[in-house]
Image (cartoon, rainbow, N blue to C red; front, top):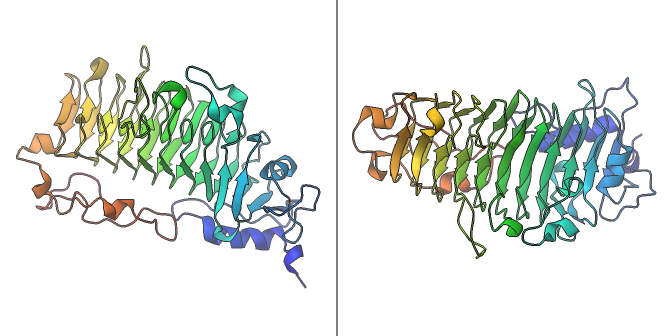
Length: 409
């Protein structure tokens, strides 16, 4: 007979998986193999780090659970707020057959708060030591992390040298640098159904805090799907100096680049999707498809000088202060297909080697608000569905005449 305090890893992880797995992802917290020595480690705000780490005798800190975890283990975090005095550091890797899982127990709300971390309050012009970057700082592979809310950190989630991880249904907001940053030699990661908003960097007057940054590194096979990136001080998504192609799809970036914090000498860029950059910018064939950028302070989508063969298809931009699709940088060889610009300051800026076909500016005519079924942004900013997917918005920025261009949700 199983009591609550003796619930096995397999049963507990099955309960956790049901609540925390997006429809588009592999299970965020897989059942432990009966043939392995894998266990479930439970954390609760009223726990004790000397305890057994069971449901009846939980640990107190996530760090203690991370330190105990081995390949195949499941870390189940009970609801509550976990204030940090030192960041959570993840350095032990799982394996391809036995990843380590970290997630919220039964969908309970877990808040990881980095307000007390010294690096969260780095002064203007200061730098954050590498080891202190992130309320959660990971340098490990084969993890499945899901259902956590990360706030007030010096970066929210920071991953450097990370391979083959799945990050699903995370919320990162009001951090003092980017909400989620992946960099270094990092390959094969999936970032699924991320909500990242309100991140800012007072130490740089808004120069570098993005919703999601995959930058300053390289590694193939990284995918972003179903993210919402909004009201961040710099860009929604930033691929600055990342040398390998990244696929971004079914993602929304809006309201980025405005000085909501009254920073002096404001330096926020304000692009929805920044697909490269550097001096010189590496040539990288990033993919952006079925995504939307609206009401950003600068461009909806920009190559930012990336001369690579960007593939931009079935995306929509709406009322961005700059250009909807800015793809004229450094002799770029971008290919733009079936994209839609609605009421941007300028629809597109294309270079002489850019390929453009079937886009709204190719088709001609006027593409204003009256040309689409709905401009109600509330349809995409509301609660996610029970499986973590974006809320359905079948009419949002869809052409009234049925022209098959632009994103569909």
